[in-house]
Image (cartoon, rainbow, N blue to C red; front, side, top):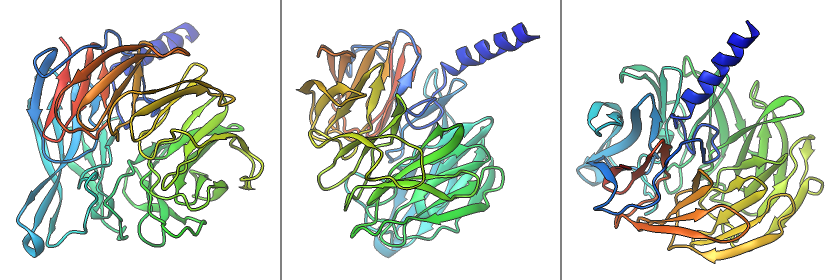
Length: 410
């Protein structure tokens, strides 16, 4: 029986390698176990297919040979504007649309949005046979994998700034995300089976600009789960059971925080956001305000405002919004190399087979060999604007641009 259990666990692990069910992959850290991932492509080379998609910067997710993404279909203008917020499912084999569902519709004037944001920026998440989509204050919903709506929640009426950005994560029986708007920022947990609000916790820092857009990270500290959720003015740890704030580390007036926290080597790696980001490597655990006691090292050079960071083996990689990547020792912050890779970047890098993939906003992807020495392997230009992050599969990359979704691979 023990051998059977081990074999079943191994089968589950192998099966999971083909799926990319949430923002930044199976573990939410940009790592893929996929094999034979492409290194070279262009508009005329190694494009398996491309299809036109509705507007949106949510990243594609992949489960069971099917792709899921969200978008917005807009018509009219000003007070007569109409936006249909949609979820859709595509065949990974040929890009064909299997279904599209209008989840919410807004009629009338919409809040202004930053030029780098969209009406559909949060990446959806799948667990078991349920798809969870989030459109900020427009609403949150759960669908089955055939597109049938299971529940909707439109209770969270808060004032976003520049639009919505934080993607939801699943923690046990809850769906968690942050609502860091123009005032009274908070985090919230909904029952994943019902959509009902289980708890709602206000942020406890008071920065001048309270808006942020950060996707949370789930960790385990001292044998207990903690939700790590950066916001304006600080990073917070919450108890998933009740939303209690367990601890926080303050970073002054840092706001518009986007990079998702990375957890490795027993440390969290956090960017403090605008205006001048600071990278903090800190030890989780304890209680209360840990600002003076739990920061192990920090850096102010080349720190990202937007892209998330990567830890591969003993190295931490981070890239500034201006396209300069830095590799440091993850435990100490000691620098190995710093190089300009590309132009302005918003999407987060991913890694597979010992390589790092970084794509800038013009659609140029630089492929590097991970390691303490800088080694560039390829530069690939799709010549289309892109702010989304990749989905990765065996022999394949899925890349969303302003107009299209690409399957890259032979």
